[in-house]
Image (tube, rainbow, N blue to C red):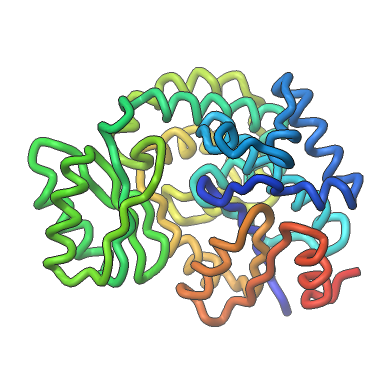
Amino acid sequence: MVSTAFLFPGQGSQAVGMGKSLAAAFPEARAVFQAADDALGDSLSRLCCDGPESELVLTRNTQPAILVTSIAAHAVWAARSGPAAFVAGHSLGEYSALVAAGSLSLGDAVRAVRARGTLMQEAVPAGTGAMAAVLGLDAEVVARVCAEAAGSEVVSPANYNSPEQTVIAGHASAVERASAKLKEAGAKRVVPLSVSAPFHCALMEPVKPRLADVLARCTVSAPRIPVVTNVEASPNADASRVVPLLLAQVSAPVRWVESVRALAAAGVTRVVELGAGKVLGGLVKRISKDIEVLNVEDPASLEKSLAAAGGR
């Protein structure tokens, strides 16, 4: 029997035009974009569909834009296919997963992630922090080398994305030191990332109390579908734990490898990535060869995935 999980992408998947064809073709998607515009009091939908890219890439815009595109894709898929046994999202995507699970309303979620993006951008002065993707080196080695390179600064694993890819984050100078040492330790490549802030490391600690104030204004319900969280890489369906886990996530690493393995261990045989791009599906393929990967980002991928899943 097929057991399905819905996956929701995080920052970095954005592209001008995302969600445009879904909104043009399906009333469910249009309704989601309209609801997000109403909640924010601006035209996020126009920014997603038409840009400009210079505005879309600002973290305060990127985060709600990716979320609304994901939920639009979810609305279209959910109307045409079976339910999920679990949901999960990468970083920002965890908020999308909570909306899909009925734990957060769309309005609360887009307002929360707009604030989250703004707070993250403001937490560290421009140029102070950095992130880099480490390719072809065991995650334990990456963590050890970061600890050795940190000195009095911060550098640590931020995203455990796949067995071959770990992203590090921290002070720019510490990331530079760690990058050199990681190459010496055998990394195939260390690629600096173009990001507005060093996410998921200790430099994000100042965000937490301010984000706590934002999340306190949200109505949180028990997830109807268990959410595999970034911080614990295990399913949560307890309403009282949603906000603490979202706050911990700000400065804790995204345990994506363990999250996918937890889904596989729970019997998941198919994942559907909902929203912009196919980044998470690519990571899933590197983590578990036994999970079928589908995605929905436009009408063509919807039709292809419905056919594969036997939906209507």
